[in-house]
Length: 145
Length: 145
DNA sequence: CAGTATCCTGCTTGATACTG
DNA sequence: CAGTATCAAGCAGGATACTG
Image (cartoon, rainbow over all chains, first blue to last red; front, side, top):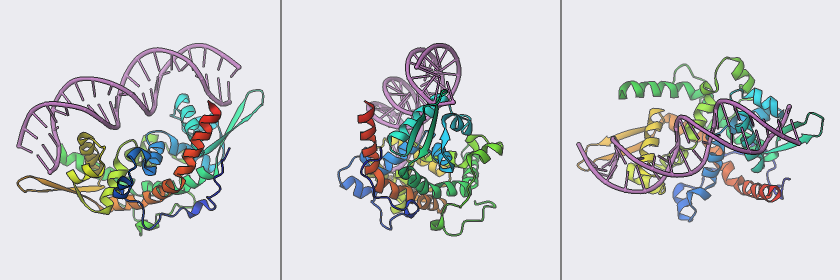
């Protein structure tokens, strides 16, 4: 595991660059949206349970059942699928301990930890502004309806 | 807007707190995952075109048609829907100029701009580590198949 | 120009049951 | 315990046509 990608040294140093690639630049470079890193990463994180799993594993490694209990309302199927997707992307490792009832431990890789660091600002934002969003929704719905 | 949530001063200073609310704590507090701010915000950003629109509007305000061209492969329907969702969440404003062919301008609100700032680290991360993810996928698929 | 309305497809997810 | 297999449902999203 872990190919020849030894470039990330400090995960916490994942600070946004002052001048990012704009949409116009992305399109001008001839890439489709599917090849766009932003879209790829966001879609990987999105719609599924990825973020919750990553946050749980950031606390400490978890076994399958632990994760299942930690995210109580995830189905066994979705947990399996999401874990395999994250493992496929190199964000976590899956370690099978050959005990009699098998136990499998999932843990973040360096790449996974750096992703969690990059997601943290969003987590903090969500915590702080969730109330504002709820209020905005209420106002919008009240006015619209 | 912005109820009693006065803890954030500088949007760029959206640095993760040393000790965030853990999943266990979230569950212990009796909230369902649906009430979880992280999940709510991420699901709003996820699966759709929200992030791309927010990034486009962060460059400058756009008219409907401009956005459509900027994100060339979005359907008119999805653009309309996504824009309305973002407006509903208080992330952008919709201004109708009563000209003869109507022109509508979309622009980020302060809340929207702060969200973009919170997403920026993720954008930077995606840019830097997209290659590593692609490699990991290749390796995984090669080994698995 | 900036939408709305309608139809239709496929992916995502859940529920349930079975296995090493 | 840690999955896999199968079935079925819901919703995101695309294509197309129409409107103020």
